[in-house]
Image 1 (cartoon, each protein chain N blue to C red):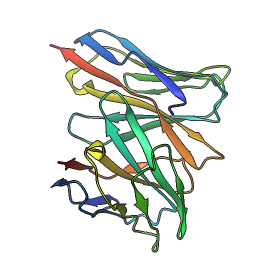
Image 2: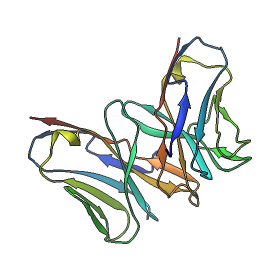
Image 3: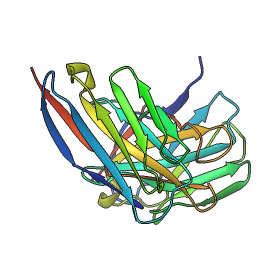
Length: 111
Length: 113
């Protein structure tokens, strides 16, 4: 089963507003990855977080790894229509052989 | 161009008729895996392969088989498809192991009647 809980499942955002999606685990994670899937497309890698408390930015996207390495967040500032899609977190398991994805947060944007 | 290819992209079949979905990558990646995507469930790993001739079950392996006879190819086989295997399937590859950036194929939409 899924090792990470991702919330919310859906996010309806007014263009220009900010939003955050979260991934939570009951166990300590070695690292966490984030992917974006546009409607009708395939998942595309965004970033990997490895260090406790790590914060990385990609333009309007800010990724954070919790101090205890049990949770992570993706914050998008000033949402645009190009941000539409589903955002997934993914964590490696079983000595780095398996990869478990969260259920995803599907984002829609109101112009 | 570095890529992962899958064929076919769309397939409608009937219960019990064996089928194979092919996956090929041109990046010399060691790790390859198959996922199915269903609404509300995200991506669930079916099988993965750490290298040639080394494969193992993911979270939902029942009803599927795989093989890894060459580094670039990782076909997914459904010996006797059933309607509950109707789904969107993705193949992915990465250098090294699961914690590295995964490169996904375009997906195969399978319908089993």
